[in-house]
Amino acid sequence: MPPFVTVAAYAPHGVGMLGAGIVSEVFDARGGGLPLFDFALCTDRPGNVRTDVGLPLVVEHGLDRLATADLVIALPWAEFRTPPGPAVLDALTAAHARGALVAAHCVGAFALAAAGLLDGRRATTHWRFAGLLAERHPDVTVEPDALYVDQGTVVTGAGAAAGFDLCLHLLRREYGATTANAIARDLVLPSHRDGGQAQYLATPVPEDSRDDRLTDVLAWAREHLHEPLPVAELARRALMSRRSFARRFAASTGTTPHAWLLSLRLSRAEELLETTDLPVEEIAHAVGFGSAAVLRAQFVRRRGVPPRSYRRSFTRTPTV
Image 1 (tube, rainbow, N blue to C red):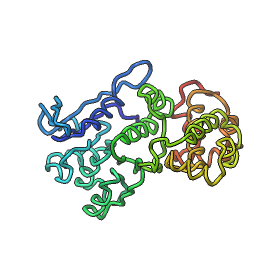
Image 2 (image 1 turned 90 degrees about the horizontal axis):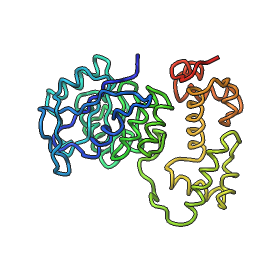
Image 3 (image 1 turned 90 degrees about the vertical axis):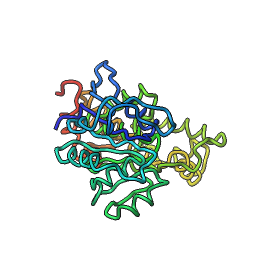
Image 4 (image 1 turned 30 degrees about the vertical axis):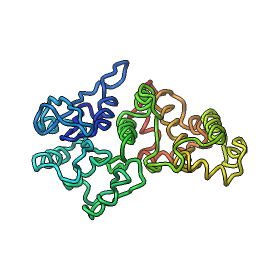
């Protein structure tokens, strides 16, 4: 199937201002070779919609936009403990049934759960309300620590700014790393955070000079992906013991050094496959996998297809 082009975000009364802003920014029409999305907010009845901060939001479209969109997003809203009305639930169900990609982040996941779209699937939401989602919908496997959970035609994301991670993941999945990274750069965002990364960090604000050393080491690692980069070497450059480095790394990034490096290497491999005609073997060495076989195994695990198939889908230049 071609990537999504038309995007409709459902904004009920009490919609989160941040959530509406996130999807509006990500799917804005930028030009410059980037996809031109047909994006619209929609609601039960067009007109002024109250937001969670009390400011009115003018929404021009009704639920009919959900009937034609390639991507349907249920936005978080203040009264999420009360399910949306039957017309909304029917519209969400019908969109999924006709083949639309359906997504939600934060407590928007409660709307998808109420529509039955999460039954038998894994899902996430804001960590604070994960227990409530699991209690109300026992047929849903709730993953409270994930940034986002991709179940194919249904994708859910964590709370607040993790909506950016969800949207960038969808762009990376459907349009490739080059497009996702370009939009992330435009929004001054990290280009990719893995879905299994923790929603919140133990030390979100740097506390001492060790965080500066860690930042320097991560920047150095990005420039030396072709090297083995064992944790012991990274710890040495950060002037820490291996144990202290691993603990500090997890507290600052929400993941392990190994998982971070693996994600970084795969992201770089995606970009090289899309934008160059380098042989797969050469790309494998350039990103630190050592051989095409290792790259292929890791790539299939992450993308579900081998590197050459990915290149045929997302290449930006002719291949040899």
